[in-house]
Image (cartoon, rainbow, N blue to C red; front, side, top):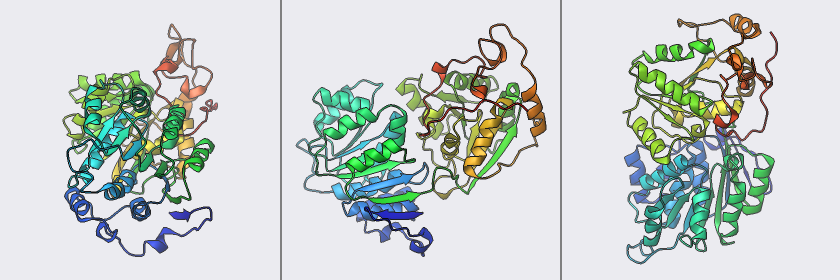
Length: 462
């Protein structure tokens, strides 16, 4: 990890800065917050927390480059609560103006961020609220009317309520833009710019992004003033404590391999990733047939259904949550030990975000990934990005060798009526592995949430 401040760059290895184990009570935090952290079981800050909290407490702008699982939410929520804490200004009674705004791309992230403010600020009189689309607005507007100190919002619902006159940003003291690269990838950047235009010029801005494409860097340059930059764990890295395995398997055997793995009762819960919404629903259907309780979470589900599925998974009422990449950076489950890539992503950075759901906060985790003949190019790209060879798991009834996988890939697919196994027009469409997905239309795919802009490679001939 390196830190650079302002326009001049000072590169300092974290091994030099972190020469002893720092504790939260050494970060000049107030007693109510320290008690809340103790209740949560937190004693030692992560690197991004250790470097961000003192900077934010100095009311300085911050540019944080951090992938998922590094403790980013606490890095900004904890010092924000301290800066906003004012017992006299926050006494219950008259309506309070919105003093802090956190803008984040998805409903799941927004809900989890607000839950973090609730946990860390449990001993403070600050009021916080989360607003997002997909549900009725009355409960949200009623809470706004009563007064809110900290507002966590998604761009669409925020702009809607601003246009209706329910939200005014003129008193914002601290603005947080979270997951900025994902905002760009999901098409929210124009909405973000509209929100920023309504903020007061004099404010503290905290800007977080896992990657820094050109447009995101330009946006950061326009809204930050002499920021301190904190950068930890580049997107190409995977947590050291995540044990990764790759399973070479025929596509038609994936469901049986998944069921075989889940026969291991030590896997109490597992987060399973698919590339498509209908694919997620099919996996859930297969698991329910064998009495494995599973639910799906993806863009076609209502907000209430998505939140219910996530709540059931966190409470372990549901053993398996099957998700598309809309959830790759939006699910934060304490002590999640297993992630399974039922289908490999065609964007290698997405693999890092997916398996980053486990091995969080220094804990260990396990990531299983299934690779069929059509996905071998995806695997090569992933291993190139993370700079390691993922160990091959061969001790299972459905194991294939790499040679067998290559031979399978070189065998022409037989026609199966309306397009065979590869799609509607006979065999795999041009575009290689992405085309060979059982005829699923592109509309079934969730948006690319990786921050990378690239097309999938066509499959090479063996």
